[in-house]
Image (cartoon, rainbow, N blue to C red; front, side):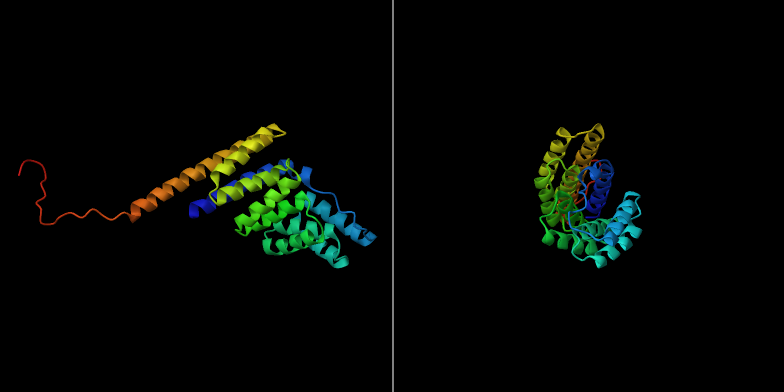
Amino acid sequence: MAEKRGFVKALSIVVFSAGLICASASRPAFSAHTVSPELSELLKRAYNQMNKGSYEPAVKTLVTAVKTDRDSISARRYLGYALLHIGAEEEALKQLALVSRMMRPAAFDSYNLGEAYFKLGKYKEAEDWFRDALGTDPQYDLARAGLIKSLAATGNYDEAYNQCQEGYKNARTEELGKYYRMMHQSVQEQRLADKYAQLEDLNSAAPPTIMDSSAPVTVGGNE
């Protein structure tokens, strides 16, 4: 189990690295909800903070934005996104779930829900949301990468391989192709580690060989 947790963490790092390349392409614009000048300024400030990687200040800004307009999908959407980046998965999930009830989730929303569930160790729920994101946008590489790590985490290696191959085949850049190859290799290594672990379990469960203590034991030579 410790090896699998280590693998999940390592594969998540690969996915995060791929995200640096393709996340911005799938990030939605702010929703069409009519906003006050005050809310507009808060959203712009939070967006700039997130683009600089300053997620904790962005969370504070977006909490104020949500208090300013509790019906703002953009404020809640990006609050959930920022909370994920500071490790507050439970709170992120609450905001993202609210967004999914306020409107049909965009691919970006489904992806973030998948990430929240994955980080909470709820891999099947994560898989469902990553699939939902791909159903909305089949070219969403981050969602496919999330699906791969979710499938691998539950031992569904064959489909994880298939998703790696699908991503590699449709990779829009050389760098994305490279990350899909890295994910494929990581899945292979974990499958092998699982097989070794199963073999060790079988060996440890096998009864020991019982030697008849009354029989003479010969050490070299003839009796």
